[in-house]
Image 1 (spheres, helix red, strand yellow):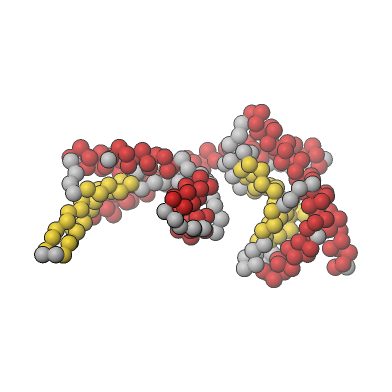
Image 2: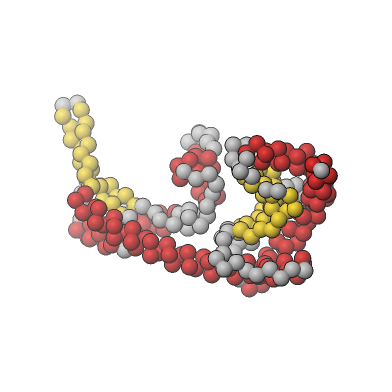
Length: 284
């Protein structure tokens, strides 16, 4: 049982957000339930949007049994010391006449020692997080450097890579509160026009203006775009997703990915340009 729990924890730690959504939907269907798996998982995590970099980074294991051997409790303590959250919960049922009672007690870690052990685990987790952040910044920085080199050649610019890499790279769309943007995750990138006004009403009006020209824009672009209006938020997107092109790519795969991204950005800019020009004429 103990090894099986660890196998499950290891398996879950490798899941992407979308894989977790698919697994939950499949399970729900097998028991006859229809659920919005994506929304429920986001609500449980208290996220507005998926974050692949944070998803599944830390997994908790709870072992429940009527009793535990010394070998199991010693192993659980050892794993906790190394920042893996493993808890042993002893459960004993009792019958009083026709009533059933269950006594549940956490024996590892002991409640009296939990505060100290939590502090130790948090320190270890912070160290792991710092290491992940450093590795992420190196990979993301290399990805942006490769993309900027291609973009500089396409646009005739001399842009420098950012000192501190972020998950996005943007330049002005030539209209207030809107920019063209590359966004990169581990295994996915996107090219988009982002509308980012502090005023939600203005944000919606600008999005609606572009949306009225949807057929014209998509015809020039050559395919459908994702139109994501968030009426109660201050950010909306018109985007193209590029699967299998995240910042973890290396070598020839990275060269291919950044060349494709730059090409898609050129198409999006060209598709949007007449509408942006028309917007300025109407506003003049």
